[in-house]
Length: 169
Image 1: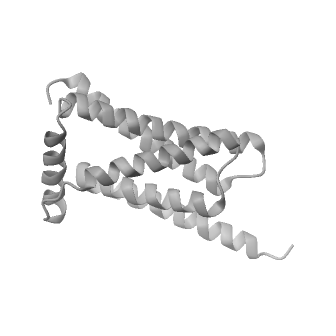
Image 2: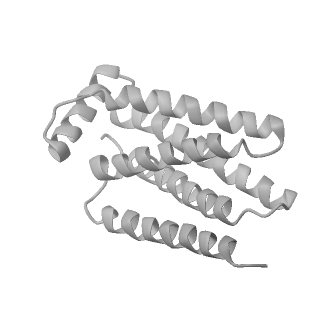
Image 3: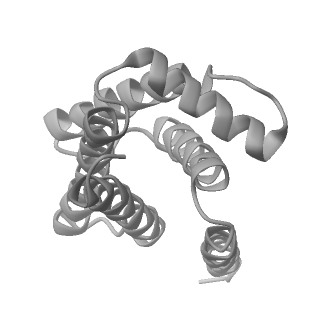
């Protein structure tokens, strides 16, 4: 990487994206019927996508100098480092994921409400899978502990929600 500002932008745009994603997921789990909470959830979800797109643009500009072959090689090398397979296809998976996420976010914005339960669950599950993999492949080892802690929070929230729903009224 040629510049320290470039490295800063690459790292912090993705960190902000993941932070907003985490907030959106927690908000989704706590979502009431309030129009304000639904709007805040959609805003966090959309901004998370925006920062992820900015991250990709920064990585292409500062890390790969707009060279697709360099980006593919970097992805393959990082994937081999973690899972032992030299595979660059994850980059194309990211393109598809970002497209789906963007479309889903825009649909929510136009509808002025979150998508249906199945669409949201599918998109959140896909986002969680993508972010976990990106963390494992491109992030430092200690990030896995942060991801595990967040996963535990989600599991506890889901369990609490199920217990609360089962209580007799």
